[in-house]
Length: 80
Image (tube, rainbow, N blue to C red; front, side, top):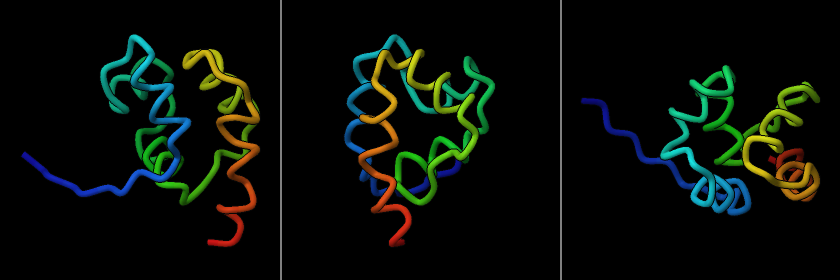
């Protein structure tokens, strides 16, 4: 068993995930076919996926607006 500590900063993403039928980031990764580490980086605001198809897929699966998931955090990610 591997344990990792992650400080989640993208509250919108995490709240949307909690409200969705997916139980974890790993399950969302399997269902969406999006790399697990890409989702972890999004949750930690280390990186936002540049591929618009990934953004649209996540927004649809999590029933969120693109701006809510990505746009409002773009400036924060670019500073880091």
